[in-house]
Image 1: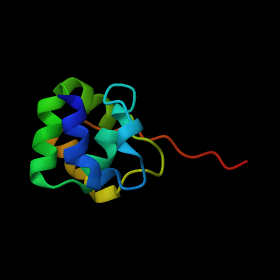
Image 2: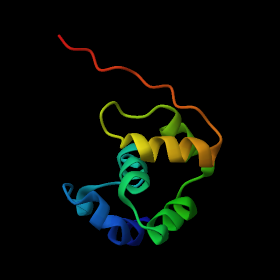
Image 3: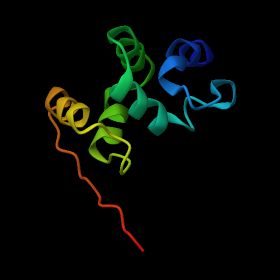
Image 4: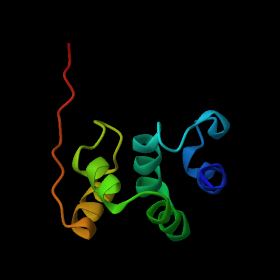
Length: 91
């Protein structure tokens, strides 16, 4: 089931080899990309594949520099949460 899910969302993971991805291991990347770039049907597939709590957790702790600000704000509103944004440290 999860392999067919990855094939359906492959266009939103264009820089990754989805054949080498694991839906559990790579869920942060998958959720981030689909919520940022996905179509309505891709987002629906995402919510059928992952628990809402898993999706919320990824949005609450966004990967720095990986989110479109408008997408992040949209999903904060939809999921009724507030992201805890971390700043990138420049060394």
